[in-house]
Length: 252
Image (tube, rainbow, N blue to C red; front, side):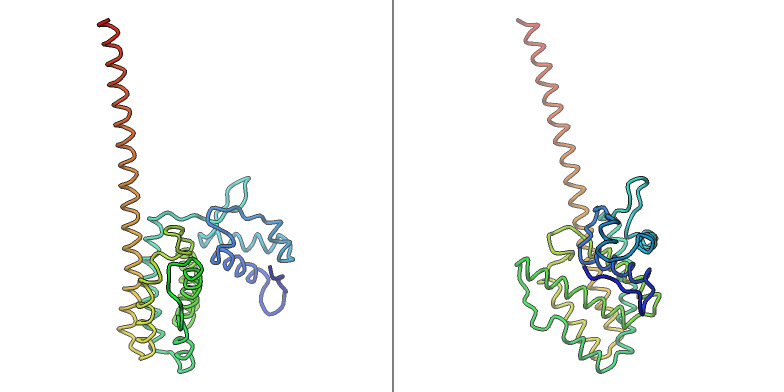
């Protein structure tokens, strides 16, 4: 892990940014404990700026402090994820509109390089590469499409979104085969500087992911319901068997 210097940026800010990246990249997995001594040693810092950064991450709901146990990376429920995607839909739609209105020729050139020549398959390595590109793409739009406040809010929501653990898709809710065309259509629309269409496509892209999460949550609840019914049926069958045993004993 890269050691942090104290030049150019405030150290607390640097540590905060580094920890955020570690959560985003999965180096600090959802539900895992954050070992402060280990991280402080790797970054060559004292625990003071580390604790300050962790407290800020707690305010952003990325980590959770448990008394007498320490800090843990937050694990978000499906319902919380759905709410986050709902917020992202509105805010990233706004960001896409702003990008289309203000994007420079140089930024369009960079934008068109996203997903260029990207291999889309079910191979876990290809999925991981696509997920990394997906993160960079959305980060790029957030950075050039939002003011500092919007960028900060969306940055946090994006990190939470990519902590999604379902489907084995490296933090993606939907497969690359489903979303690659949506990404390319959005890139083309922004490059044409069409703010209304860009906002529409950005919102649709995130709405589809939100709907997929809803479907998953519904199936999860139905599965739990079926499990409870199965246990109740097994219990009822045992009771019938016990009663039958008692009756046969009395009859004998």
